Image 1 (tube, protein in one colour):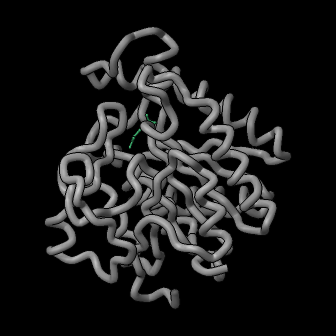
Image 2 (cartoon, rainbow, N blue to C red):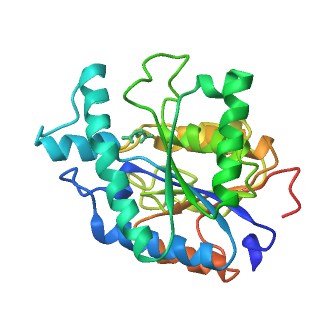
Length: 266
Ligand code: GLU
C-alpha cells in the first residue's frame, strides 16, 4: 500500500478554499466526495482525524455578510455561526456512510498546559477507540491572542498529528503540491515530488499568502511540515479539488509533494 503501508492513523487537513465556493458557501459536492473517500479509507482500517477549516467563511455566507469581516469580534461571531453549519453537513454526509463524527475545538494553550494537553490526548484516544472520526478546528470564537491562537489550521493540523501520534498528515489544499516557484505566476514552475529536509533553501522557495478565503499560504504549510517531520511524521501536500485522488495514494501511487520524516521508516 505504498505510503499508507504502515499508516494506521492519518490526520487529514482540508482548507477553506477547498471546502467553499467563491461565494463563501459550502461546496457540498466536494465535501460529499471528500467524506466518501475518507469513509472508505476508514472502512479499510485506517483511523481518520479530520482538521477542517471553513467555519468563518460558512458563517459569513450564512448571514449574507458579503466578505470576511475585518474585526476579530466579527470574525469570531462568524466562526460561531459557521462551525455548527459545517458540523451539520459533516454529520449528515458521514452518517450516510455509517460513520460517527465528533467535534473537537482546540486552542493553543491546550498544548502548553500539561493537564489540558493530557485531557485532549485522552479524548482523541477514546474517540478513535470508539471508531469515531474526530473533526477538529481552531476554537475561533474564543481564541484571540498569541497564547490561544494557532494562527491557521496548517499549524493546528501539525500539532493535532503529533498529539494523536498519527502516522501521516495529509494537507489538502488548492495547489497540486510544493513547486520550485509560484505556479500562479510562473507557468514553468516545477512540482517537487519529494522533500528530504526542510532547510533554508526550501523555506526560501515558499512565501506569499494563500487565497482571499483561506489563511494558509505555502510558508504555513512548510512550517507545519517542519513540525510533523521533526516529530517523525511524514506529510503530503495534495490538491483537494478532486478528493478521489486520495485513492491513488491508498493504491500505492504517488501524488503531490511528500515531506520525509527522518525518524520514520518510509
Ligand atoms: N479556523 C478557521 C475557520 O474555520 C480557518 C483557519 C485556516 O483556514 O487556517 O474558518
